Structures are given as structure tokens and as C-alpha cells.
Image 1 (cartoon, rainbow, N blue to C red):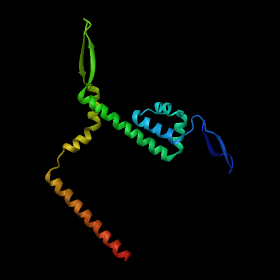
Image 2: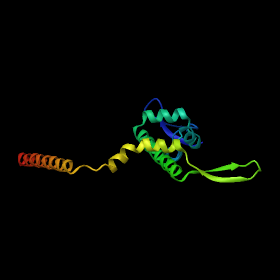
Image 3: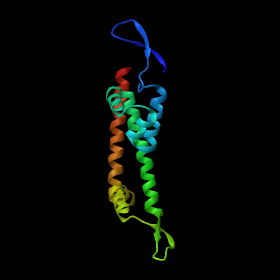
Length: 163
């Protein structure tokens, strides 16, 4: 077991054996990598040799680790969404056994999965499809120009005040 230099109860450093489940940079990288692949904290802990309690405690006390954890979950979520989209569009293979013992392979499409994905992305799709009438576009353009003019005036005032 590796030894590491630690400060225990005072200002004098002491050498002691590292705990079996102590955090190292390598274990932390392994944990975050597995978490990003699986979105499963328990599996990430098992593969990196860290207890689940220790992982949650570190997440609570270490802001940088908490951020990395969120990023790993985000990566895992994106991967999961891609897999589900692929499954919804391309189906998943299903083996059907007949009474005579023969097998047939077919693609199965999950209606529930498709409906869930439609609900998740309905607003985004509506925004992409919806085209504004010309009068709304003109009104929005005028508002943007007015706002840009106000920002320009404010910027000019700040520049003249700083001179």
C-alpha cells in the first residue's frame, strides 16, 4: 500500500499508509470516466475502488469534483439520449421463436420510447418549424435596432466619462 505525506492534528507532516479507498488523481479520473460511460455511481465506485459514501462525501465537500461529476453525468446523459434516439429510429432486434422451433429476427420499435422522445423535443421542434409572419419580423427587427442604439449611446457616454 502506498504511503503519503499528510498533516495530522498539527503542523508537522507525518507519513502514513494511504487508506484502501482514499482518493487519488488516478482513482478520480477512473471514477469520472466510468460515470460518464455508464451514468451509474455505484459502478463507477466499484471500478475505481472507492466507497459510494466516500464519493458522495467528496462531491459535497469539493467544488471542482462536484463540477466534474455534473459534466460526467451530462456526457452520460447525451450518450443515453443518442442510444435511445437510434433505437427509436432504427428499432431493436427481437428474436421470435415459432412453435416449430424456428426463429425469426425482426426489428421492434417502442411506441413508448418514441412518444417520450416526442414529448421531450416538442418545444424545440415547434420553434424550428414555426415561421413568424412578416409583421412580427419587422417589429422584432425594430426592437433590436432600438436596443442597439440605446447600447451605443450608453457606451459613448461611458467612453466620454472615462476620458
